[in-house]
Length: 171
Image (tube, rainbow, N blue to C red; front, top):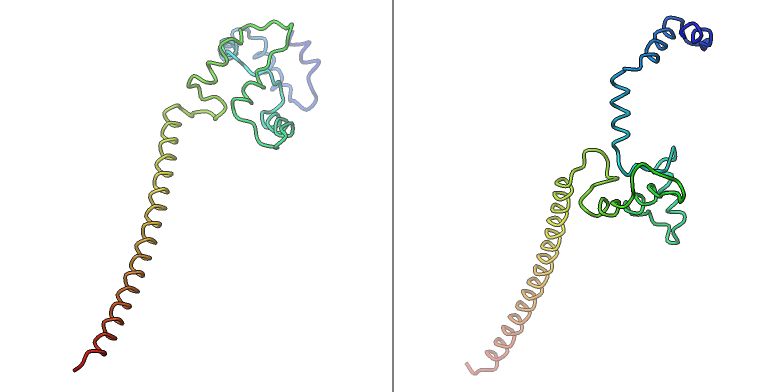
């Protein structure tokens, strides 16, 4: 087997390196490969996009949209897991809707947890509340300034009226 493999060795790979690769490939009990195969077989709802990147799929979906808006993560998830009729699959697609809407954080990237998203939403809400409070404060401040100016004008009018009355009084 190895002699046949060495005869078909690419010219750009050294003989020692290629023979080591042949030994590795001929070893059927390579645990890492078996573990990877196990993991692949256990995955549910794998994408059906093939080698096409999700970025290209998102751009295609944007171009198909009349408003040229980026699609939601849910729409990308559904599009990349579309099943071909007549083809048999190892797993069913029945639970995909629950996986999309039931707290799963797909398509956000690795390591993003539900707790992180809740914290982010909470921070966003706090920032919005802070902005509203600041706007309300600025509005009240402007109202108070207008009331102060109005009071000063009325006080000036009152003082002017009092002076004119005092001038008309006999001494």
